[in-house]
Image 1 (cartoon, rainbow, N blue to C red):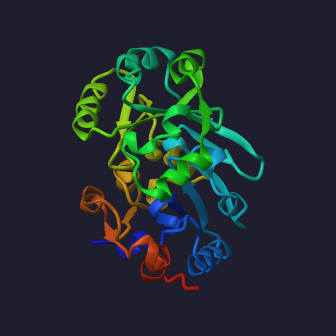
Image 2: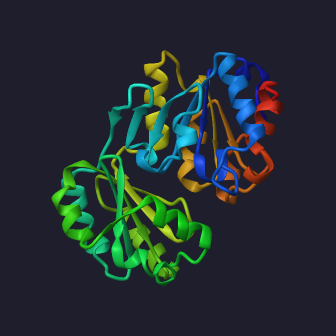
Length: 284
């Protein structure tokens, strides 16, 4: 049950992107745009909290009026979009990267490296994504359009091990994915989450959307009790739990719905706008 008094204290609206703020075409729908504009006009801080690297966030989000801050790479960085600079980082250590190398270097696993705001991916895997479990055409187009091909990701990873934001491992074999997730979770200095049924994502020891969002709230003079957070996948769970109000999308995985305070409509049905109208009275 959501406390109506808690809703009066909300100052920050934090949104995951894919499956949450963005619709099925990876756009912000007109109704959601109008609602967000109304929210910023009311003095609320609209914040992005995504697994995407900064270079892969759509221009309409980066330049949306009133959106100043973006938590990226699952909490590895916070960007001030107005100043166009990173104002916070929480990265993997070189030691943690090396400890995970026996699993990362598996040739049957597609590797994506997030660092310096960009994403590099195995060039051979980008040419044959179904082999690595990405069979959906929309997802294939997303990976091809947002990743830079890399001929040797293992070598590149070692050369840049001290400034890695996130490592995304993609699997065709789900049993191997689950096995690797369990084994990698035991490595000191690494957090393991998933944002899709075919991947696991490696971050630093304390890297999460939740920690980055709490840090940003403090920078703005607020606390976790001033945050309402929206998400759809398991990598959003800690963020929803740390906020005063956690909202799961109607299309969210069941694990997230179980920890959410409220479940709204799916992202393809303007779920963000519906929730803001229902909970905070913000109507387009």
